[in-house]
Length: 178
Image 1 (cartoon, rainbow, N blue to C red):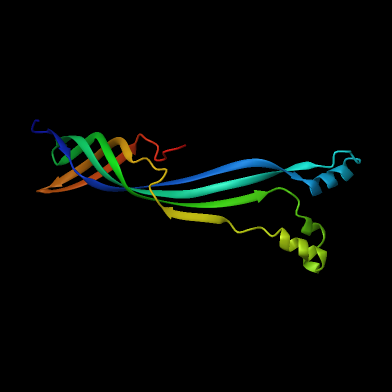
Image 2 (image 1 turned 90 degrees about the horizontal axis):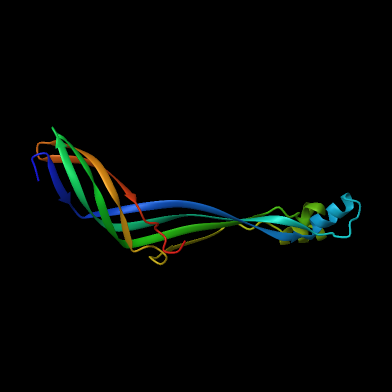
């Protein structure tokens, strides 16, 4: 457009990653905790209490986009400044999630001495904490197929060689349903 100002475009293969974590809290009856609170509270007729159950989901989503920006470029001496919108098309995606459940309920085996054998060791086997459950899959299911955003950047020109650094900011959520 002018000696210092120009428009440029290109085709880029861009990988983006998103870390996430969420905690869902629910209540569940804690009959053993209710018995102890009944004894401690003077024998109330309601011998039930509730325990909190924390379900934690954490994971990482990795997506690969074919992206094309339309960048306005301003050149000052050997330094270039870039800014403009981009559009991207999802090529591949993968997601890995880990699920963990934790409860504040009283473990009955801890009351009966689970390490001493007998009934306590039987209960200990029933109430042993389970390892976290995880799942991993490669799929575009549940991910948005199109990405829109803005690109800014700076570059340095040496003879006919350019060194550029870009930053992309997406305007859309990567999830189809949220």
